[in-house]
Length: 95
Image (cartoon, rainbow, N blue to C red; front, side):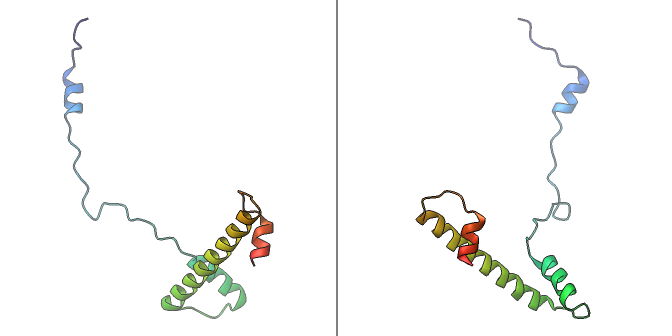
């Protein structure tokens, strides 16, 4: 077989070296939070009341803690009953 001949354009394209992006151009990692949902509920309950960032952080921690507790208890219940799926029944019992 004859060796492949690369055209001038293809050779130039292949030789380009990627330049690393600067700190500003890098994409920031998203920080997941319940803040928008907490705020929506606050608006429904008390439309004229605001919330500080420190209070929002505390509420976010509270929601995460409750979620973890319910998930752990649901997991335990599913394990006791030799089930591999957590259903609404396990969640209801855990609460």
